[in-house]
Image (cartoon, rainbow, N blue to C red; front, top):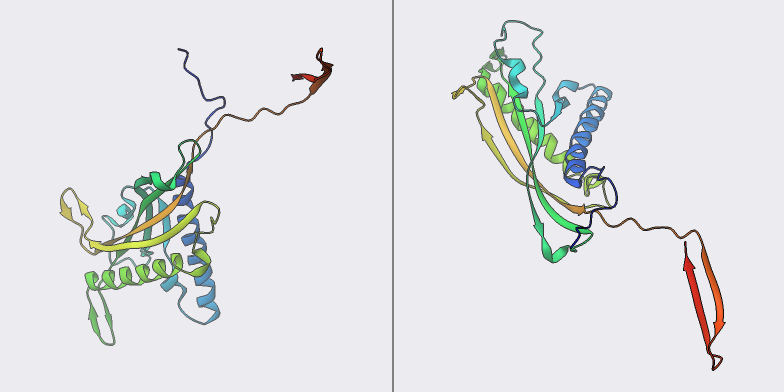
Length: 226
């Protein structure tokens, strides 16, 4: 028996890719917007600033082998989004068109801490890093759970989003913990539709109909489709 092929090129992104990139775009747009608002209120915009990456393995490498006495070190916190896994719900899916996917995205946060002296006393690098991490977690959770992002601004394909968990960890290099850098991961669950290819409908350009009668005058139609 001959195998039937899909009648068109699969040339699209799956929804899990679109959602991953949408999370990144929302976070990038909002950190810029919040910095503008902070300036308008005479506050330090750097407290609302973070860099956004997608799918990077070690985005914090820019902090390796740096001169901690350099006042121009780029301490901007790093946020890295990557797709973790997905499960499909057969009960909420169809076998030929769309499947309900429940996906987990990891939103990794990296911050660099540098020891410094303040009026209240000395703040150690690891303490500074943890405080920064808490701040970025706060910003990300508030941004993604804001009402305007209830469906990640993809209302037709996203059903829901939810922060599953937050975990702190220490970045490692060659099995050694990297000092002064704190890491945290927000596991972010998103439910959405994935679509599968269907036969492309063929548009009829012409229908020719011939009216005939049977011997008993019953009406017969002969149609030719083009």
